[in-house]
Length: 149
Image (cartoon, rainbow, N blue to C red; front, side):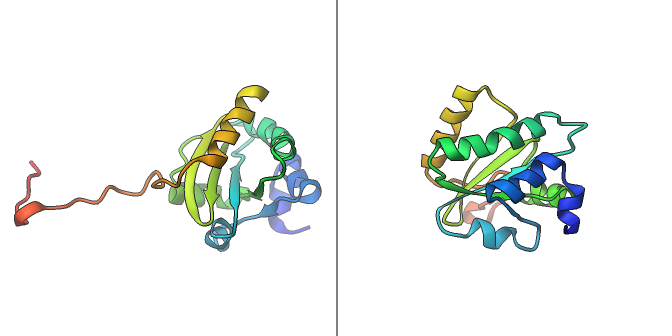
């Protein structure tokens, strides 16, 4: 068993071992999210601080099956979560971060009741690409003058 799996809660390990998810660390996050189709990064968070993360770990394979396995799941190891979360603008755990063909779609944070979760994931799967949260808004100066005070 690799170090990533040993540090992860058992229910997150189960996502990888039994439900086809793959570990996605900081070194392979770009390659994973750039892959074809819809990719979902799962940030469980510390299960003591964020017990809903374990609930999402249980429900995620059910969502995957209910929606025709229309997305690939990446589980972020605990030792990479903070760094990747900052890079992707994740501010609340647990979180599912959606990408399609390398483009950011949306982030779903927290746990929802089943019907609401299915609906939100369906919406996420069909969203147009958008700007990743946490990436600064470009500042444009018109005519070389600064209008900041």
